[in-house]
Figure 1: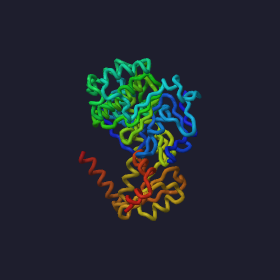
Figure 2: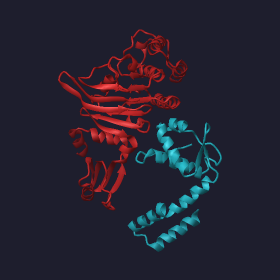
Figure 3: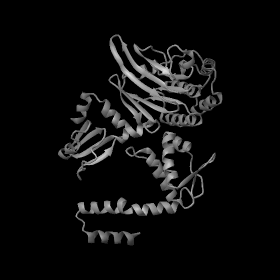
Length: 123
Length: 292
């Protein structure tokens, strides 16, 4: 597991984001156990209460569940839910920023559309 | 269940070290105590653990005075920079003495830590390097059966590998057996995410006292062209500034004006704990040295 933390965003949100990312990329598979609060906090020197706060965000989002005495598990359908959420946020997270940067660079709408086409054909 | 420090004042030979200091330590939390050299961190820890008597003020545990009180003092342990162990004593015998003094000691965990850190228990305390003296004292601090552990410069002389190991073991033992830790250190970045609550001691006072995420949530860098930055930060609590070429950065500690629009040219970022500490505890001379 590879976590990359920055120092300017609240750590509990970063913990939630990184676990979510791992579920999205299927590093953590549905139905399987994810590392415990203690394991994560030991590895990255993060207060266990902070890690738990991050995990609880994912519990509330119905992505992971606590099995008493065992640990946290990825819920079936979690990945699909993440995809759905990210599609909803795609406009705000990417398109708005893309257009705003394009405007600063005086890239026209037509030019931007061309660049997007190029991106699709390249990959 | 908590330790209350109330109205503590400390002077030595007419010099004020601490002034009207109040703080609460709750059970099962990890605290950071930060301050410049000579800010009075060690003095404060010594007062809480009854090694120094404050000029004024009280320290209580669950309402009971901690002054010369065997019952409350048995619940706390201070690992300090000062070496109070006899130079000629062997490490293994010092472990035994501690066990007698505290009426209990986690022998199995101590043995595990001795092995993990590679501490020679047959060595005499006086022959240990600075790093291994710290390690020896850390092992004791992590293995005594107390509710409050105070760690004054716990990683002094430890190499990066041993520091890493220490932070991991601290979390391990804390998760197994929650208790309160107060860590005083200069290596702020290394403990920034480890601590739940932070105290910053400066100019005889506690100038920051709060949960780390709350403190960081109201610490900002506002940067951009000088006039735009100044317009945006007017009337905010500006605690420092930097200039680089045409770019000005204002450091703000406190709430922003929510209804004030952020100009396109201005960037708002959060500060990390170490940078916030440096800004808040800079002397005027140091602050201008950065600017020029």
